[in-house]
Structures are given as structure tokens and as C-alpha cells.
Length: 238
Image (tube, rainbow, N blue to C red):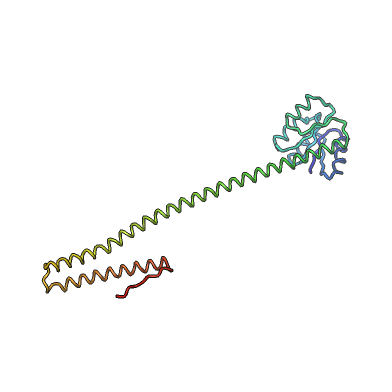
């Protein structure tokens, strides 16, 4: 991990750098709080070691800035003025751990190792939460698309039913009108209202109406065949 050591004591800075570098960490150091803050703003660190007492910006103030910038930051406070009150304040402000000077190298290694593990777990938890949120958003979007598809399908089916109904009414009218006319002519002829010499003209009219009906029926059969290619239409011999 990338580690920043902020301490105004050269011995502490270099000691931490040597110990942690041997652990495979990338270690940077800063001699003042402002220098440390500039480094924090320029690049991310996985863990920060902060001295409490520094001449410009103290460790607690720098801790507040760092946590406000990165809520997942892992900070370890190091100080030669260890008190319970100071430890409680540091933890309240977001510090991960508190080490009193002077400290052993093993304690530093163990604390830093645990801090880096906590950082990893925090970032992994945030990543998983983000993936879960994206998954839920995708599921909501898919559900919305499915509902929209169902709504459009229902509208299409309703429109198709309306068109079929209108088409059926139109066909019924087109078939009924000439049939009624033919029947009317037949009644007139059978009732003796049309003289024999005029019946031919009426018969020709009936023939025209019948031809028109046959043409309409042929069109309907062709339409049915186009819509259903596998449909076999049996044509009765004339």
C-alpha cells in the first residue's frame, strides 16, 4: 500500500520509512502538517501516520481534513504525549489506531498491516455496494422496459381488435348491400311487379352485384392466404 508518514521528528519519519519499505510498502514522508496536506491533496494514500504535535498543523486537525476528504481513509495517530483523552478524541475524529512513542517495529508493522487490511475491506465493501446498486438499478430498468413492452403490446392488441371489428363491419356491409338488392329484385320479379320484357335488365343488374360479391370474396380469400401461408383454401367447383 501507499503510506504517508507526517512527523516533525526526522528519526520517526526515517524509522517508519525503513521499517515499512521492507514490508513492501510505498512510503512517503512529510516534516510538517501543511506538507503532509499538500501530499494528501496531490495523490491518494492507503494509510497515513500522523503525529499529534506539529508546529503548524497538528495531527488532529490534519485528521479532520483527511477524513472529510476521504471517509474511507485509515489514519494512525502517533504521539509522545499519550493520554486517554487524546486517544478518545483521535478515535472520535476518525482515527483507526493510536500508537504512543517510542514504539517497537513489530507493533508498527502489525498496526499498519491491520490498517491496510481494513482499508482493503472498506474499499471492497464500497465496491460491492456499488455493484449491488447498479444491479438493482438494472433490474428496475429491465422491469420498466418489460412493463412498457406489455403496455405497448396491450395497446397493439386493442388496436388490432378494433381494426378487425371495423374490417368485419365493412365486409358485412359490402356483402349485405348487394345481397339485399338481389333479394329485392327477386321479390319484385316473383311478385309479378316486373313485366317479363323488363326482367332481363334486372337479371343483368343482379349478375353485376353477384360478380362484385364474388370479387370481394376472392380478395378476402387471398388476404387470408397471405396472412396464413399454411392455410389451405378449398375452392368449390362452380
